[in-house]
Every structure is written in C-alpha cells, then in structure tokens.
Image 1: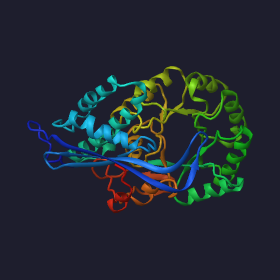
Image 2: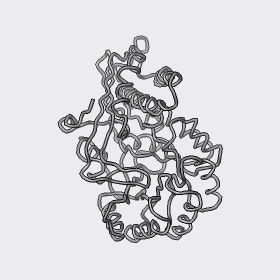
Image 3: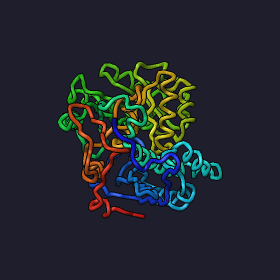
Image 4: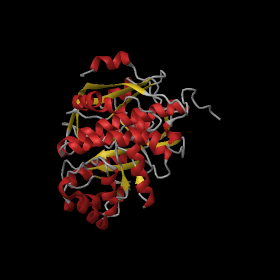
Length: 384
C-alpha cells in the first residue's frame, strides 16, 4: 500500500500560501473550423498553487480564445485571497467558498468565473493527490487504469476533398486512436453525409465514429442527417441542434432517431446537466470540467448521470479527462487532438504524455494529475 504523504498532518494541515495563473496563447499554422466557429490559436490557463509545506501544483485548463487573460486575472485577484490559508485536501470546502463569487456578477460574467473556479479546483485536486500520495483517478474511484481514446477531427478547411477524410481516419488509426468525433453541421445534411461516409470507408467498421454538429442545424435538418448516416454505425450525435431551444429540441430529436444524443460541453454547472437529464434530452453527457467548475463539479455531474443510466464523455483535455472518465463506471472514451497543427501543447509541451496504443490510453500512475510541462516551450507563449 502506498504511504500517505508526510505533509498531511491531521492536527496541523498544510495551507495554501500562493496562487499563480498564467494565460497561454499558441498561434496555429492553419485554421481549423467546425460548423459554428474557427480556431486560429490554442489557448489555455496554467494554474499553480503553492503550500506552506513546500508542496506545489501545476495544471492547465481550457481553450478560451477570447477571455484567457480575464480568467487568469479572476484567479489571481479575486479567488486567490479567498483560499489563502485553506487546506488543499478539503476540496469541497474550497469549492463552496470560491463559488460565492458567482452570485454577485451578471450572467455575462459567469462563464469566465466558472472557468476560473475550474482552474483552481483542478489545481486543488492535483495538490490533494500529491499530498495523499495517489493519482486523481484513484482519488475519484479508480474504476479502471486504461480507457478507449478517440480524436476530434473531420474539420472543415477550404480545398479539402471528400477522399481526404478517409485518409485522415487512416492516419488517426496509425497514431493509436480508436475513434473520431467528426465535425458536421456546417453544410447541408446531404453534403455532410458524403464526408462522414468517406470517413467510415477509411476507418473501417470497428472504428468508433461520432458526429458533432456544434449546434449547427435545426431539428428537421438534424433528423435528415441522422437518417442518412444511420447505416454508417454512428456512435453518437453531439450538439445536433441550434442553441436557443436545444434541450426541448434534443428531447424531440431523441424520439425521432436511433443514434444516441450527446451534449453537455456548453453547460457550466452540474445543475445545468440535471436540466438535460430531467428533460430526457441526452444519452451521453460530455460535461467539460474546465467550463464547469473543475473536477469537484464534474464528479457531481457524473454521479447524476450514473443515477439515470447516462454515460459520460468529456470535451477535450485528454490530460485531465483520462483520470476522471476512467475513475467512474459510466465513463466511455477520452478525447484527444493528435494533430499537432490543432494542439501544439499536447504535441510538444507535455514532457510525460500518457501512453496511447491500439485505441486505448493508459491512466498516468504518478501523483495528482501527473502533468510535467515543458517551460522552455511554454514560456514563449505567455500572454499574461
């Protein structure tokens, strides 16, 4: 049995004495586009928390391309003073204290506030694991130590041929991916069907293939697309309908089609996930801990989903999701950006990336989230 870290003292617990958040922005060599957005940069927030006993956390969260510096400011100026002196092994107490900052702000601010809370909560879990001598995966339950991995791909780019999607799937298999979340919703259902059909041809029948419309269609368009791709063995249909009435529309679409509905990445609390569940709108939930308050809130959402038989995915963030999804029985697949032109941080700025092979990723066995960053590279892209 692994020994508890000597820094954990029941009568004299360690205390947080410093917090530092750093915004990172890496320009991408080419633009990647989904149905409703384009991606010119890879962004993240690195959060460091230090204790009076010398224990340190270093994690990174999210891909906020518009408000990264503001999220870092919230952490450094608004949250840090609230958690000085707190015991980082008491994540629920810290989360409850920090969440109070959301009550005095307007709705327009809350997305950034929840992302800031998420960064701090992730660092707290990292510290807790290090203090107790265990990984976050095992802290959360340790259901398994290996889990299937899929890539996000099928991006729209000017000049792409239909055949290129088949070639992309073959490449993903060659780098160890077991599936792909494929971008749709930016063209007509018929045109996007042709792209997905090419991907299935290149991938073969066993490859996990989901479709992500990024809220690009109305319910009738989404229905037509689902009917077209039904013979292609599609694992899930993600965010299939426009945002303004998505919960009711997904519940209705779920009655019309056989493909499982996946949503949740646009939500920022477990209460919002409960709204999806209560409406019968989803089969899978891909709640993102970096959008929605961190691992503490993610675990609440996973428990809610488990209670009604809904499976969990996660939006991006392989280095975090591998711990959480593998920790719970209803976790399905970890998501990844293996293409270095889409995620240069994953490609070259993590020293100890988890092992990926034949469609599976191993859970890191080090302490906390077990992330070692290459600061020689990252320091070139600091924006705050």
